[in-house]
Image (cartoon, rainbow, N blue to C red):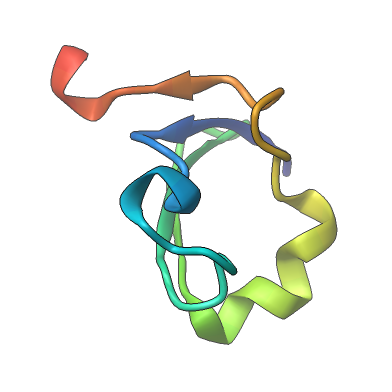
Length: 62
């Protein structure tokens, strides 16, 4: 399973300087969605897209 895209803006655009306390929402390759919070960030850090290269989609435009 892979992360396909971020839903919404990255944590840095929401005011998180470190990204360590801001949740993120991603669409996964199997069609499911994942909400990443502080408890999963370290384990999934290598899979997270890096801003600004990560494709993003604003949830309100879907």
